[in-house]
Image (cartoon, rainbow, N blue to C red):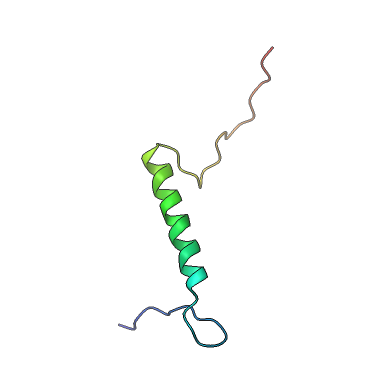
Length: 52
């Protein structure tokens, strides 16, 4: 089994911005799941009628 590929910058250092953004996205998705709303799914699948 090969180890996972580590994202690096052109100078060879680890791309910390990539991993920080990935962590924020993963935390956001987890929070949305805990609140009962999956952010990958549209909020309203069908358009709503305007309230009169």
